[in-house]
Image 1 (cartoon, rainbow, N blue to C red):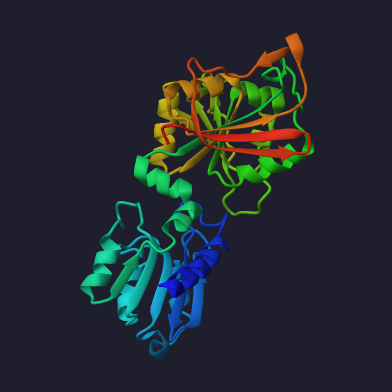
Image 2: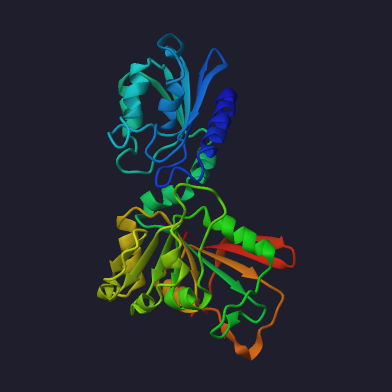
Length: 351
């Protein structure tokens, strides 16, 4: 059993190699062992490409695979998607034992891959390093368990709870925070801002990690004001997709940028989240401003609050960050110092 943990740890390390490139697929790693010797490793390298099991199996001969043990961080699939079923390939390879860390939360897979292997006479062990494997794909797991994206609300505030100076771009936090936020964005599939933030700050919303799937820039523009601002980076920077949610899509009829997509919405946060869920977006990083923060908070859909705080007072010329109506309890609080700034992360108690 101790060997199972050791080899699963190696499979988890393999899975991490696919970070930032698997998009809406989970990160998965695999290790094939025979007579206590590692014969091959594999991982899911890119969205739509071979799964980890197939990657590892492809490196070995039939003779090597026969009577071996496969360690895999997520339950092998049993259905046809972008790739054929991995369970079928495992059975065909005459692997005699499969050790699985996490049961796949996706309803197309959950338990079906395991049962298919068992029905073929393969010994199956589950739950080895399950928590570590789940942490690899936290947003993926949450999405398929709760049928909506994980939502993190991020704010950068002063000591007097201000977001910035009125009607002008204001840099409150330091360069360490700037670097951390750009890295943090990379872990999410979409970044959300409001139209005021788009017009005042004119952000590019870039992330620091190189990826074929950078986060989608989502802008909530209920009144359609951005159609008057084709100069904004959201419309001129082609490096990331921009999705505009508005009640007036006709205002954008003359916009022909291939990386910009217009969605019609009824103006509610719930509708935006529902539409993003339907297209498979598993995680949202809500950057603001204050009205967007307040609107998201009131829905009860926020799962995590990330606050960056700087030692500065903006006074009466500053505009306030959002304020909850009730007392809020957090779990799993984390505090980190970034030079003279602080990062405070807390999950909401409903999570």
